[in-house]
Image (tube, rainbow, N blue to C red; front, side):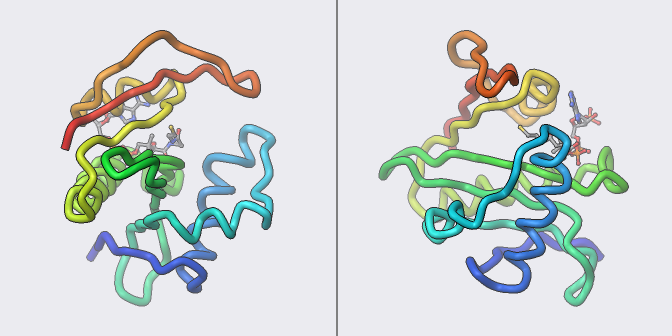
Length: 145
Ligand SMILES: CC(C)(COP(=O)(O)OP(=O)(O)OC[C@H]1O[C@@H](n2cnc3c(N)ncnc32)[C@H](O)[C@@H]1OP(=O)(O)O)[C@@H](O)C(=O)NCCC(=O)NCCS
């Protein structure tokens, strides 16, 4: 039974999420997860998808507050074996509820060009022109909650 969960910063699940984000997002791009990122992440909301209560983490994302209104969705990752089964969509729907309950009114994100279609399906709109960071092309996307 799959379940979306809140993950506490610094917990065992948090470390699993860091590993999953590294494996799915950072490693393929040749990027590292640096321990110096951790203190900043204490302020974020961390969300995961587990197979069962004691089962492994198969997806996750982070939400970084920007100000009282806006929160930034980052590093959405679904384990390769489980991609295309609706977990990415479920994770984002759960994250949107969490963000709304926490008082935020807008989610913003920088989507890699290859996943813009995925976010459009879930109601995100492109804002502005594409831009490059570390050789990767992104689009800014937003959704009002
Ligand atoms: C992108 C990602 C998060 C999507 O999660 P997922 O669980 O595989 O996606 P879902 O099964 O929930 O897909 C929901 C819908 O989006 C579509 N979709 C999935 N990936 C897509 C893509 N790259 N482009 C366009 N549409 C996409 C699905 O076909 C599905 O459409 P449907 O409702 O018409 O059937 C996941 O594939 C992943 O982790 N990819 C690697 C990391 C990555 O690129 N993350 C994004 C960082 S910005």
